[in-house]
Length: 95
Image (cartoon, rainbow, N blue to C red):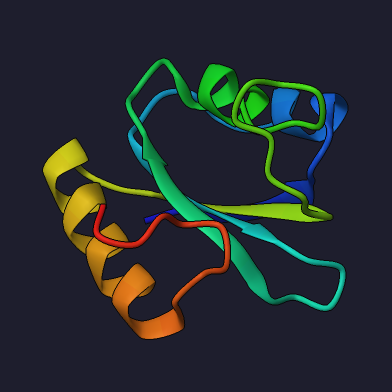
């Protein structure tokens, strides 16, 4: 499936496609994974905006990398694998 990397800001988020579920990773300036999550089709930009500085679920980051998935269930399965492997700093334990 398609993947894309953009700056983690309002302008960068607006460039992302909204037509499929995605797995997203919020990365530091050095490329380290700070947070991994999923967003449903049609809600990608809105979900990522919830993590911008000043938002209710703010996560620090410099870039966001998305990977479009065929279904939300496949996105959630891959999210679990990525979190188990990379242990992102801002993902809550036991989620």
